[in-house]
Image (cartoon, rainbow, N blue to C red; front, side, top):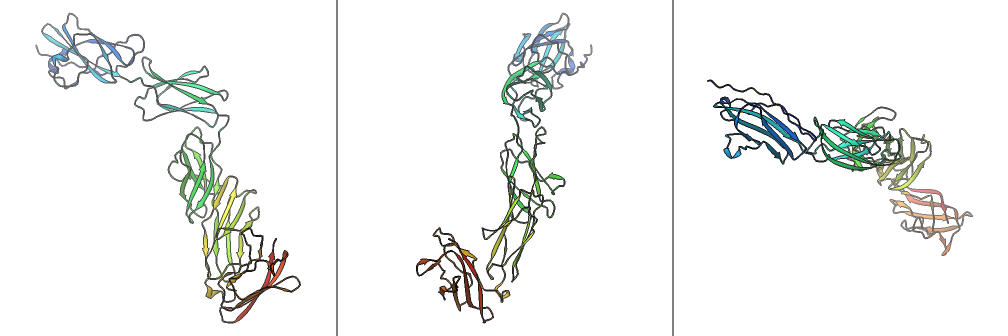
Length: 470
């Protein structure tokens, strides 16, 4: 009699926590030797418990004899030593197993096969993070070995719920408090449950958005932003214009980072904002901060400084530094947009920087340096005379000193309010220490007259006044 090839269909056999379940047969592996010589057999498979999984296989071919089973068929010929006469077997490890049962009846061999899936029961890797609306979100580690189809969550406030699939789960408590959250995975059907992960979650009274604290422009296009934040999420840097729309300006910023280098697209897209990457925290955006425009143009008469400060409030303050020292405070509401510096020295480099402070944010423009060549400054004195000094021995402006390139022909005289000379020198390196005959001169305004040789070779005189401060 010609033998027939059996026809089978695969079915996934899953775990069961309590009770017994009958399995449907699966198609036998084509790699099984002599498969086409076997008749289609019948058997049932029952399972009990989670890992380690115990199964019982039962022959369903009436009056069959020589019942033998391979519980872990791994391909190739079936060795007699792998055949078992037992009906019950325990799988100690996770994995997918092929179970094959052979029985004899009336000089024929019958075969039946099953696929046994043994799934892990390890506790899920999960963390709890707060949401902007006062809720909490469970975030599962995407790299954990077992992803359960269903999760059971005991929120610690008498609420126990089941949630399908491996995804983020959100929940909102009635009031801020400390809660113990218990999370476990559940295999379905059958409700075989994994181990529990226990979390202690302290619901905050409120959450603070990130704060951009500083922006230091390296040049007209590049800026380094420093920021602070305590939210348990990565951040997205947004760039846009004052009062306009904002778009992402780069990759995600790790929650452990505190600064980011980025670019500006002048003249409009010079404003930035930080947004939490997590959807349940995304409404906690930082305040918008903006970079300012700043320029300096040199000329023989004066250096002209211009600036534009976008999106500034009435509380904003600004100042200009010259050669790393404070030079001019800009008055609120910063409507001023231009200033001139006539006290520079021709032939010498002078650098300016604009610093704007608003709320928690400070912006530092790139230093702008200018130098007016000496040959363009024929009518200007080749030196700078300070407007005041304070000889109080504090190490700051204790002497009246002339700065700059001094001509070889030079003399200076200083007079008190009655026109009496109090100081005279032909040495440009010699400063006045504020004394007259080793006696401290009184505070007040003193006139001076400086005679020098200008760049045309002609003698010139510069007169003015200086304030002595005690």
